[in-house]
Length: 172
Image (cartoon, rainbow, N blue to C red; front, side):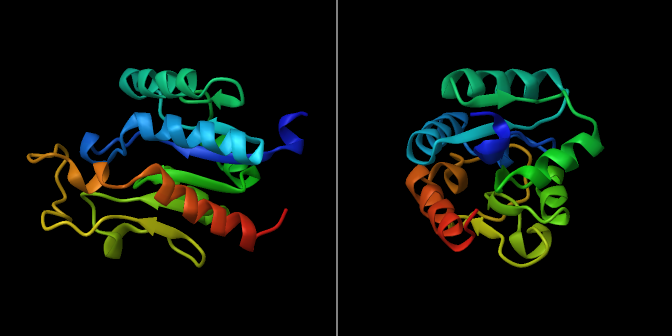
């Protein structure tokens, strides 16, 4: 099958603002493998051209393996918008790409930790913010001074359940 015939799910694992906003990379790997196995999905990884983010996304793409295309640093803003529109949904940290996906009508599953979803969640209906209520969040810090529990407590299965519900509600 070509990409056009597959269920396309976008991942945006990085965040320019800081590492505290990032769900652990291994969780993206596990989620990607699960979505490919359970839904015969294709995963497209988006990200910036920064060396750090390109290295992060290369490692995640390699961890996911076949069925994953890493476009980190390879798209213009217009190309990114077009590709996001083709995705059934985007799984992302709190990023600019999250807002672009929402703007082009792609459903967003946003993983929030140190940021405040009341201020920066995706605009529009049908988007889901996954977060854990912990005493230190939202701290709004770039680097976690604690143990990053706001992100580490979010399990792959939790995100998978949200995706499952979205895929059932929005048939192809």
